Image 1 (cartoon, rainbow over the protein chains, first blue to last red):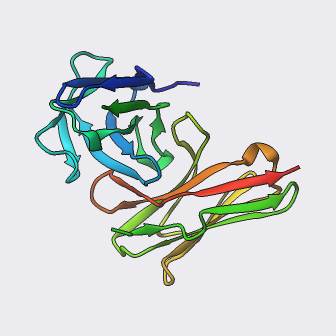
Image 2 (image 1 turned 30 degrees about the vertical axis):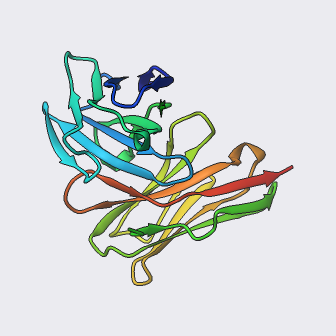
Length: 113
Length: 112
């Protein structure tokens, strides 16, 4: 069964450093997403991406965040200057038709120290 | 912001019996609802969905019911199996865009 692959599975970074979280969506999917889940809290939407541009973003997705699809297979989330409160599980997802639900990756656990 | 709410943080059920997980929402602009299952250290896995024009959708052991007037949906799992033990999230999508709003999750434990 096709999978969404995320790397790394766990990243520890110093506050103020830049991090890039990587995702390989399912190859024939057209819509790409980032969500996050802070420990003990809800899964929260960050951003959706379609046709090489952001289609929606939440209030969380401020100027410190950016997304990119640098080639035909990767989808990245960059946090420019990490804060302690950015510590969370970050999930990438992709879909071709929302009617059947997204496919999520296993997540990257980001720990900012 | 509690647009999607799952009031029961946990539920324990005996194997073979029915599990009923509940979800309430407040935003009448939601037009599509989904249930996801999540195991530890994995991403959410899509289970079943329902459009707001329907009141029931069934897929094997899983059935989702939607009561629009009450802004309530439920997931029924019958018969429950120990492998169903996981955290279950309901999610809703508005009629503009693809963003999902998730509930807080219900941890289901199915005892052998």
